[in-house]
Image (cartoon, rainbow, N blue to C red; front, side, top):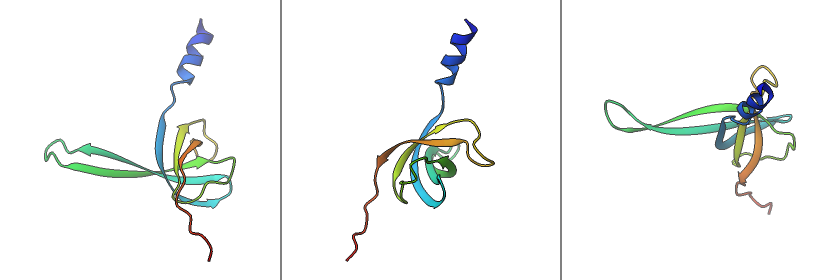
Length: 96
């Protein structure tokens, strides 16, 4: 019974979608996730952004790609997320 509860809790991980803003590190990308909310008093829509360090095993993700990240165990001092899939690839400039 206890084993079943642990597996169910484990599948309930946070998933976020954002844009890659940096890929200069080895097997790590920085993902910018934006969220919109309405101000409780002034009723204006506000956009806030936060950057997450995510683990990228393929090392093939480029700046501008839209990726989905999932919460995971701590992988380093700052990395607590990993890339699950590339939702949309950024437009690449072709060499002339």
